[in-house]
Structures are given as structure tokens and as C-alpha cells.
Length: 408
Image: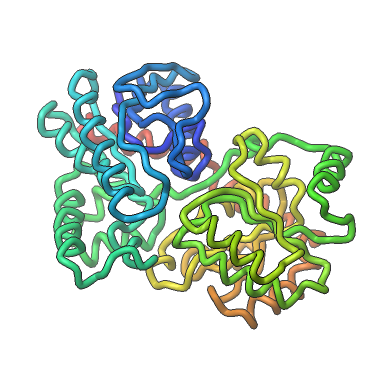
């Protein structure tokens, strides 16, 4: 089976969609599928082309059996609704044009930027091939949740119409949570049989090992004293993540043995740096986005992993992939997300949750989590979670699910 995979993010970008897409594509190649990825030139999240690349009309590279076609798009930083929309739309057009010249049996278009669906649907129509839509965020509701768009606006109503159209016309729809499937069935009347739930996960060997000497050297280089417990947040500093709340909490516990390490970039990064300086915080260190091969060093350096989102009913449906990456390194989760994520953390006993943007609960959680890493229940929970959310198995099942589009 030949799969044409349309995704806005792909390595060397290091966000969750890029990592998931690449890991899955590698497994599909092992299953004997021929994978062609159409993506943009790497620039997320700063809107700056990575070293070694340029925003050319068309380029081709190969990696682990995957053919990667990069096309021109309007490049914008991950901030500002209009510019981001222009970025997304331009990629939709470029990927459609490039896709017309590629032989395929199936088209897979993945969100979270929903404009890939326009490309996927159009290519399906012109090439007379089935297409699969992968939903990683309930868009456009997710952009309403972060305040970038009003639910009363005309634009929102138009996007909702397109959303329903794509769900109904796709041959298969893939979602990453049970809540997403429930939403499609109840709100859009999509037949359950054409919806596949393939959640985020992690491969057990995805994190490189680090010895204690290297960890101590890294900690010292950051100026963090040995007695401090490091709480890390590694990921996008965006509109959805509510990290300003964490900074205000950090101000109240400067005398406590905790140090916060924020790694990444995004639309709120500069505001967070300004807030840190305004609050004169000494217990927070910010680091810009790092290459994927170095992420494991900082995960191993950490004592606890922070996973946080703004308080919104929309975010009760998501399961952030950083949960699994940190559990693979046996790092307890400080979870500021409700819904399915909270159910996972509590049922497997691999962390402690708090109500998003609830300062009292967050500070109480810090007092409770210290004894968790050394318990047998925590280790057993990690083993069970990694088995149940093994990305290799998830990718294989997803590949079989897509193949049904061809066989039926």
C-alpha cells in the first residue's frame, strides 16, 4: 500500500505531531507500506527555517525508508491568528499541488492544523483515492478555548461547517482520545465503524540513557543547586498551556526546594520571560527549544514532569504526549489537565493531578508528590502504562485500520 501522508510538522521539528507522525511512518515502512510525506520546511515554533534548509518550492529527502517532500509555505511564528492562518492555508495549497504528481493508494491528512484536511479532501477527489483524516485537536473549538477566536463570529461558523463536512466525507477518521470519538458520534452523527481511536504513546527505547555524572554536570551548568528538586516543562509555550499561572505559583514557594525548568518556545514565551523578570523569580530557568536528541538529557535531569493546560472544557478531551515520554524515564507527572488525562494518571498511579489554574491545589500537590517516585506502585504503574500505550503497537494497529480503506 502506498500512503501519501500530509502533515504540517515533521522532524527535525520536535513537537508532538512531528514525533508521532515520524514514529508511525517508520513502523508503516516496516509493515511494507510505501510512505511519502508532504510537509513544509522545518520552522516550528519560531517561524525560522532550520539550519541546512531553505524555503524552496520543492525538495526531496529520504529517511529510514520514508520519502519526505518539503514544499514552500508562508512562514510565520506560532503567534497571531491571521498570520498563522495564512501559514496553514499556504501549506494546504502547496501540499495539494505537490500531491497531484504522486502515485498513492491512500491519502492521510493529519491535524492539529485543520487546513491539511482541505488538501487531503481535494486530493482524494482529483485522484479518486480514499482519504483518512487524523484529528489531534478538536479544531476550531480548540482555538476558541485559547481566546484566539470567538464562538459567535462568522469565521467560526464557517469553520464549523467545514469541520462537519470533512468528518462526513473522509473514508476513515482517526482520533487520539475516546472523548473525541464520542464527540464525533454525538455531535456530528458519524458512524462509529469508520472512527478509529489510536492514542498517543511512546516507544520504550525512545529515550537515551544518561549516567549520573552527566546529569550532575548538566545541573551545575544550569546554576541549579544540588538540593533543588527540578520540575520540568518541555514543550510549546503557547496560548493553551497556562504557564503564567505556574510562574505566579512559583513566586509563593521561592523558599521551597523546587526549581522550575521551562524548555521550548511559542506564542507566550516573551510574555513569560517578562513576567519572570517582573516577579523577580529566582526559581525558574528558561531554555529555548533543543534538538530531539538532547531532550532525554533534560528529562533525566528532572525529578518531576509538569503537564499543564488552561482550564477549559475543550482540554478535557486531550491526552498530551509528554505524559508518556516522561513516564518512560520514570518521572512522576504533575498534571494540570482534567478529563481523560487525569483518568490515566490516577488509574495507573503515575502522578498527581490538580485542577487547572487552581493555585491552592497546585501547591498542595507539590507537597504530596515527593514520596511517589520510590514506591513499588509507581514502578508497576509505569510498566503497565508503557505496555498499554506502546507507540509501535499503536502504529501497527493504525496501519491495519487504514488498509481497510483499500480492501473494502
